[in-house]
Image 1 (cartoon, one colour):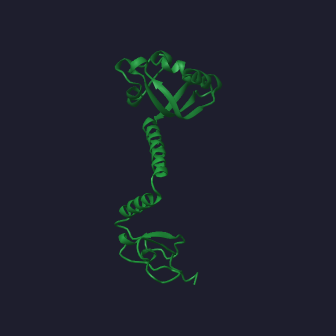
Image 2: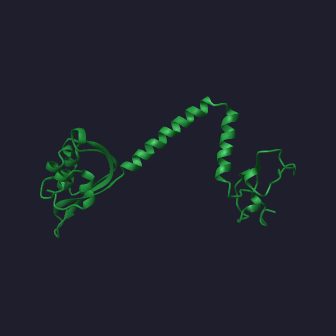
Image 3: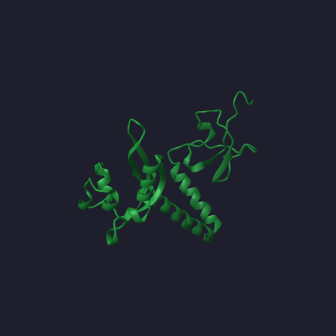
Length: 191
């Protein structure tokens, strides 16, 4: 029996005819019966043990109005003063947008990998260099610009994007163009 629910719950399950309490949840949302969610509620009620799920796929609605949704949720037994189960509390967060963004990101990655495999290597590297320079336009990645002299990483320095040019550590000369691998400045401890 659905005793109470917040407005977000009713918005999520959709439809004005579903905005009501006092009905068994399986009657209000029959699609949950077929997907096993009502059986899980019954199991939590009978066992007194909570159940949690992440990114659970749920089909909400029926027929043409059905939509796929994803939820992180828990079913927690509600206990009376004597420790007896008197109901089940459902706490859920819809994660559909996150799941769709993850799918889209994965699709884009596959597409970019396909493009990279088909593109000539010099063109790929030049495009990557341009993208990094665009991102670093207002930042200086030269070791001489670092605020922390103990930084223990090497940086790829975009020469055109940085006002301070770095020399090659081995030769002391400026590179002809492009990128130079710059080591961190020595600290007093490292000599």
